[in-house]
Image (cartoon, rainbow, N blue to C red):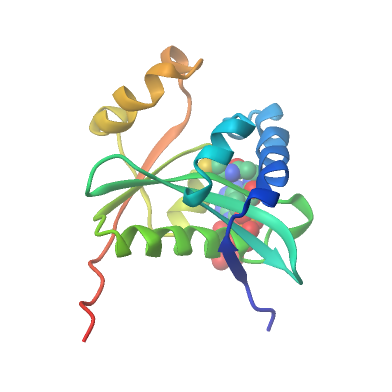
Length: 160
Ligand SMILES: CC(C)(COP(=O)(O)OP(=O)(O)OC[C@H]1O[C@@H](n2cnc3c(N)ncnc32)[C@H](O)[C@@H]1OP(=O)(O)O)[C@@H](O)C(=O)NCCC(=O)NCCS
């Protein structure tokens, strides 16, 4: 079976990540992020690879010591449907668990994908950290049509 791999993003991945997100943003599938913001938040990004080719990305946003978000998730069209999206989300969740987060959220247009990964729809009003911290500066703030989803993370085992 093909192995799914991810690694931390590096500076040389910034143009790829930006291009991938921008392409989907033009289709209205996600919100784009400026290249400078991606570069500044690079430590929050991971990329998915296949035979050393970078084919996807995701980032971990944290709001409080317990709440995180899967953000900027995307897989190149030709590589979709092979498990990379699921793998990216599970690596982001593990990063969150390692930081002690107990909840992950996602704002998305593909609720079916996140439902498969154990997320449930919640109201935007139940996520004030996101709405008042980030969404207020979004051009779509007053007519947001994304679906908010949430998953509880189980605590990681304490090291022996
Ligand atoms: C959403 C996205 C990241 C999924 O990546 P992917 O690599 O194709 O997903 P996977 O192959 O890991 O799929 C995992 C499961 O979700 C299902 N799935 C994938 N896309 C789905 C969708 N749009 N709706 C419902 N289910 C979906 C798959 O069938 C698979 O289910 P299975 O395990 O029962 O076969 C990818 O389609 C993408 O980049 N889309 C455009 C950008 C986007 O919408 N990003 C999300 C922003 S929050």
